[in-house]
Length: 163
Image 1 (cartoon, rainbow, N blue to C red):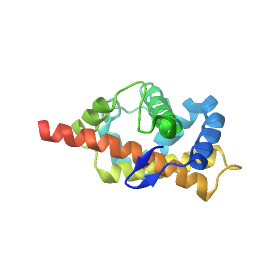
Image 2 (cartoon, rainbow, N blue to C red):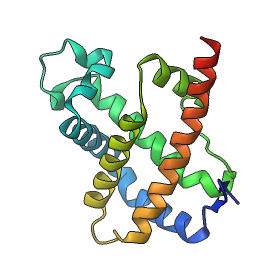
Image 3 (cartoon, rainbow, N blue to C red):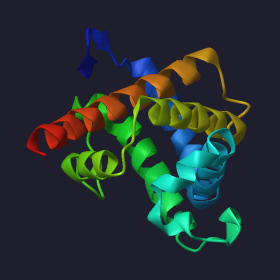
């Protein structure tokens, strides 16, 4: 069972995450873009963290690099949540945690960025599966996201110590 600071990611939480991800998966590209647009709506300055957005005058929805990046991040986040209990730890497929930590460290990502991202993620999921949404589902996705962020922060800290 996946444990984290004394908490257990339960079967019930896993079932809620899996059920909602099964519905969302087919719209991952669209949902990924919505997710990032929410982030930038809440925190416009976050655009500066992305080299491909810094000097771009193209509307965000039409940026050819944002769409694939947004989908990749959304899918990685959701897939990490789905496998959390089974794997017993945070795992990511397309990129490893060391690389994620190094990238987030390099671009100066801080706790506030992770909080904005969590809010945007939960809002995106809530809008994607409104009939399934509940406090329990919100807590399950929030817990899974917090574990992913903790794993990324551990790698960020390792990068700061090596710098």
